[in-house]
Image (cartoon, rainbow, N blue to C red):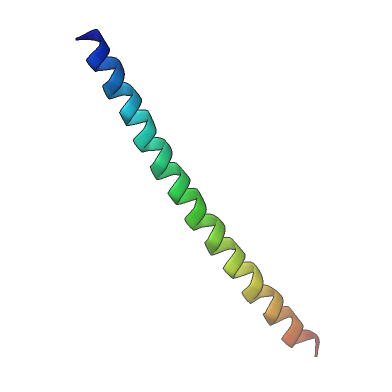
Length: 47
């Protein structure tokens, strides 16, 4: 029983970790896309 609870806790931790990682990756991609958009916008403004 105790072992089962430990496994359950571990799987929940792993799931949270996976969700956090995917969310972090999504945010990173979003920010890099915005950075490129901003840099292009600044380049156009500087002309």
